[in-house]
Length: 260
Image (cartoon, rainbow, N blue to C red):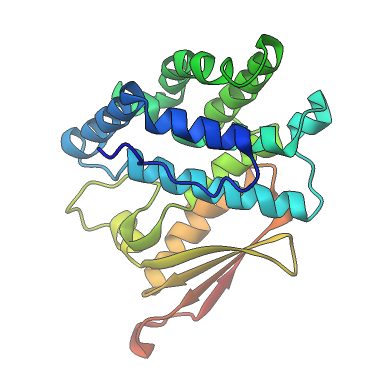
């Protein structure tokens, strides 16, 4: 596994730059992510839950958060603790990287194991960047995002909602966040393989537009049944507009456009 598995647009956020460097140099973290994939892919026949997945989620979360901030949405780390946008970025990145760490242990209730496995990493990373009080605050917010990244719990912060949505958006070319057995022909696998591209953009109707291109109408299942639920329970419902377009051959088009 590469020592630079995580690449992020850190911009002017020196705290984030320091964090990314620490993560890339952490053999223990990279090995846990490898173990999560062994459990998910090799043993269960599910989709990727390892370093590629968390890198995609972290980049998506960072983009979503920055657009929301640009559009005037205030992260909870500022509302509740009077910290900064830069601190909010660390929260979503840390939660994105750690959210599936528990897959190294077990699939069921893996969020709880992700919390347990992340505690040591959080202490090590954050106390090198913050004093103990602020390190503890950031850790608390990250743990909330980990606990609520999947149902049935509901995110209560902007940052946690961002991670929940970003996790669901890793669906390009069969990279569906909902696991399906490799080689199985069912609505999960067919719909997942129908997703060609996912783009996160500044919106006009709402702060964020998520543009999804599909080769087959079956991709609607991913959008309507799965992504809709993640957005609806994220706390970001009023900020996200989803537009899904069918780009396959005319004969395969049952519908051409679907919106949330």
